[in-house]
Length: 534
Image 1 (cartoon, one colour):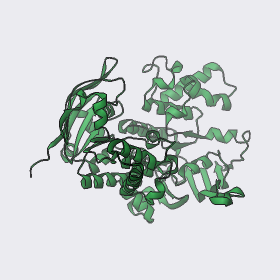
Image 2 (cartoon, helix red, strand yellow; image 1 turned 45 degrees about the vertical axis):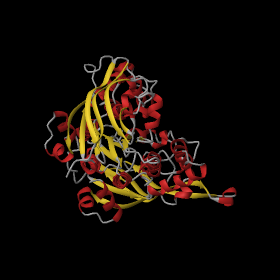
Image 3 (cartoon, helix red, strand yellow; image 1 turned 90 degrees about the horizontal axis):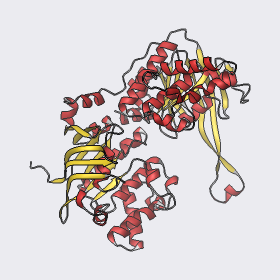
Image 4 (tube, rainbow, N blue to C red; image 1 turned 90 degrees about the vertical axis):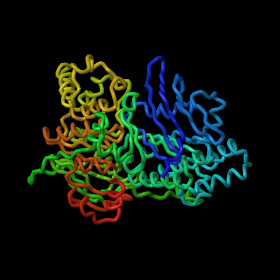
């Protein structure tokens, strides 16, 4: 069978900012109707590569060539003027961005934003554009498309917003779709739905897709070929089957070896209970639809009668999709929100009174999902890590306080030798993985018994995530820590947890030993979650 004609041929592409090269002479090509994955960690240059093709890398200097086969003939994208590129963008090449909530305009409805593209590119009337927008929304599988066209971005779920972004990108039937991490912000089952949708639309419309991602599982399931990028260079490329079966470059092997590895010490049979929840429920007031909302408010049940025990040295994985209630359950465990039922730390219940609960707060600390937003940019490392000591150990001297901060940082692998002047540095002066280590040190400085880990690796690249998981595994063995692990990532749960609670629509639909639940799931939702993750 003859191969499809080449749609895009990139030759010696270089992209620089202020004289510093971030993309250094890359070569790749995409054939018509092909799916190519550009893989690499943050900072590898993969997104800048895609943006530069459309002249969207603001402030960048580009060189090389990017020959693209338009319907009217081949053009060099890098040699086109801004006006000429406007004719290419959306019409021949479209882009789906990583986070639709920031890419979509919050002031206009989804239908209006798709119709705007159609009116601009195809010169159709407002009425025609409105109907075409509804048809495109229906094409992407959003239910009740006519009603959803009138919704604003914040009124849609994450998966629906991403589908709306895809509908907008497909408005003019492009020949090439650039998809920049289109599933990173989504739950596993929604992620699979978006992948299936892209694959279906790609076949139906005969377009090519350049998928930009760091998710190797996604690449294995979706792409025809893969190009691996490291520090601005493409270090390896070929068919997915060949590269995954026999990677030739060191970096490719590192990425493939960075999947979470289980390293969990067995739980002692007489390990005491350090955290217990019994019949915990939480609900929130919500506005009622229509005129009834003028006189009374309804209630939304976020968590319904959930209970479990966490033992010393144990990791309990609470897994589920966004909206399942798992993070709300974590807030209850931390005593940070009102709840029904009973929550006890070491046999002592939260009172809801700040002074009375101080001793319990020292025992239960939390590590949040995104260290960049959870660490104050205005505080130095010493102030950040030692902040809890000011509350819980006010009597210690300055030297002793500083030593405890230094010890906590050393525990997570941050030392003065590696980072001279580390105590005076600020969070932005550290990488993503290092910032997460700072967040862990901030929790450990109080010597807690329980760490609540809220998606501790979801904001990190695969190699950094693997490093943080290994750190957490080592800390548990060395200190006997107990972890309440909140995540939607099944691979992380498999690597860390002794037991698992599966949350769905506010309920714990399945609970038990990880080996039992994941090898023979009893609830349909658990089976669906596992199937979408593998």
